Length: 250
Length: 125
Image 1 (cartoon, each protein chain N blue to C red):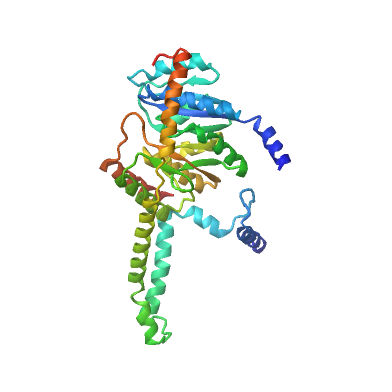
Image 2: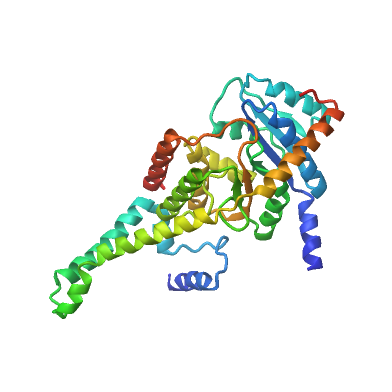
């Protein structure tokens, strides 16, 4: 046990984790998520950087990000703004261009994903040498906060249908709290064309198709503290369309 | 080929990772080429064919009448069972969906802590 521990330690010394944070109007949340990220990375001792990709937020997210950069240093906080709102996939590509880490975390900047799980992701990845580790709300101690019965029913129902049709080998397909090996994320992003919820689903389905190994970590998902999250008819229709597209093409 | 098949099977049985091995069993290849849609169509047609053969006794097996009585309503039975299974599973999972009250409380407390600390560090919200 002791020898195993020391071997992971030396292996870990070369690893660096780049956190990609695509933002749009996250002025209030960004300082908090950055503070939490710094806290948990510092406590666990892993090397990291945070890459903020702001899509021209009118609320001044970028200005706050610049302040954070002054506080935490330019080697910890990198700013990669874009002029206007573009897709999530291109945000990852854009952010990764300057990432110096060999591992990439993707997560939402709205505090629904808590950085306290980051050490668990890293341990899980090392434990199985996984190509990607996905946070899951649907198994183990995972869960959600702030969802009513309707939301839970839609979520569980959609997940069940997806599991039956695609057999993806991962329990949470639409979640977006994940750890990737950098080259794996680069390859996947190239191949994925979907938007919204379906994008994350396509990423994991294609990962499985390409033979990448997937680990899972149960996470608690605390629905947006500020702002509103919606799950309307439009989202459901586009989800079903995306699901059928993946069903027919993967 | 036989050797490869055996090693593939044994790795499957023992649950060993075949991530690094280079053997390609034809089933694996087939699975990666076929889309999920085609896999479903293949599965449904195989089962449907078997059902048709037995129900209408196309192979002239002269099965006892009782067998055919059991076989012909099978698709309906199957759909009903699957429907019940689906409803039960989704219902159970909705009912046991964790409400992370603790996580929400912890986050709220940390937000306050973070705001104070960031203000101290000179951040203007």
